[in-house]
Length: 360
Image (cartoon, rainbow, N blue to C red; front, side, top):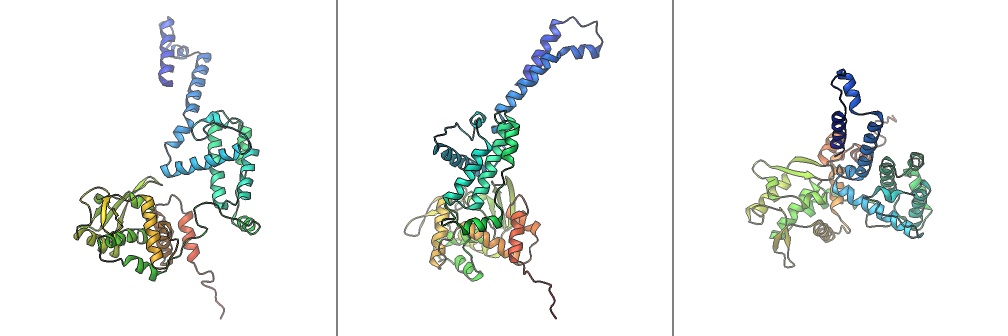
């Protein structure tokens, strides 16, 4: 739109001037006079500023945007608790007018006092810094104020331990402080489900989590067409990192998938997993993330793993891979992580600290 406006302005200038007698380079210079070029640049900047939030959000995964919206929602609640009203912080750059580093610093301390987990506080601080930068680019927050906001530091692991040791409540929210650990023996028990329609569905669900490290959203999004039993290949999409991926099915996953298909439990097309009724029979296609989460929890409780989640299964997969010497780069690719930070953590957790130390 701005480009069309600039071109229109240039055409008007060309039509209003009799410059045929001028040299080509002089005619070009006269197409936009300095004042007009400045106005065109300002118009372009205003248009870009207005779209800054939307342009950024179009590049992010839906899961990231949901989390950011929740982060900004809590910040708005914090402001309202002090009778400070603001607009739509997620969509409108103007809503950031008046936001200062002092308010964001106070928000961080408020979360500590409320008992929010330190890693969660760090993530929320990152969200506020990101949208402050966008608001600065949109002209709402002054550059010097953004520089102060950017200087606010999150908490290190050492600081986290000190903070948690000094407060009674150190975790608010649904996330667990640490994963439910699964032993190899318990993994076998989870995979060995009854020879019923629901049992075969559950076995496939569990194998995809334990042997392939799928996130719950990725599992819920699987379709029959993503599974090729002839070649033993699984194709699926990882929305968090925005990439398609291919896995070779593990021996257990291929075995239970074939049983799910051979005995008529697998749909012909569409969503791979089917819902189940209270009597154990299977119903309509499509399990929601919430339904999968509850089913994993129930299956875990049945063998004494209380509070088990789909993410615990992903943790088991990554930990097992690291324990067996998987290269961090390979683990990063297979797990669909955008950086080496997470796979390196799993590798480090499983390293023997005194490996190579000689005492004799």
